[in-house]
Image (cartoon, rainbow, N blue to C red):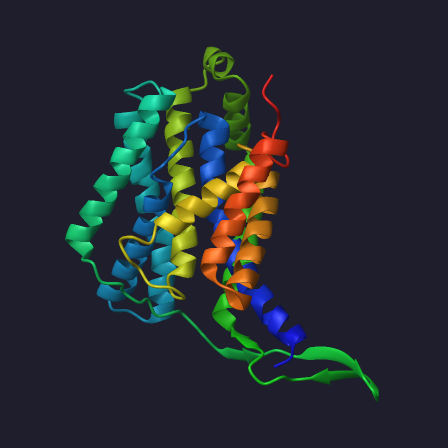
Length: 308
């Protein structure tokens, strides 16, 4: 296969990575943007979503499509509820103090990880995709005979991978509508701007914080449910999503939702392409260098607002 089709195939893998990364990083960005909380346990909520998806789709023993539909409903709900309870009984008790919050979420990380190890085991468990039709992709080129459509051998993908990209776009669009067109979105934005003034006008700020923390974890769980039929559920699978999510949020701008999407596309596409042509390790090194450059030359990120 020539370089052009090979690059196109790598770009598709990058788009898949970017789609899941955008969902995961968006959860982290919303939590920080509204609550000013750095959630170190965010990757473990991602992992927990994948494990619950395996449990639902495998132990219930139904058709893969029905199991996947149940998993994408149940996993975010359970993970979001757990996160909301953690906010209510842990983070609110320490009054969201930045230093103690980081320590508390690190503790939450190890509690979730080790509990999953004891209940789920150390093995990586596969999840059967709801559908996985192999699709051959065309390539367009200009030859001696003019414009031509060819079908290179090996240039293809699966219908499920394309579904993940489309589903992520639909979910992010729904999130934007929730934030910009609903009463709950207005309350979240008011709480973000001035929580004390919002509370003075009768907004239950603590309840909003719990819902926001649960929403952020639920978005990570949705990303995990979408990717687990391609990867495998494992109790240590939260490390890379956490690292990449922090990279995306820092580059895009802390709390900036549009910046998070743009940064997720940049990091996801570069990670996919560099991983195919070189190595995943090099992709992580380049992403880390990008973070360092952003912190030096634009500390507030691409679309973040500088602190006044």
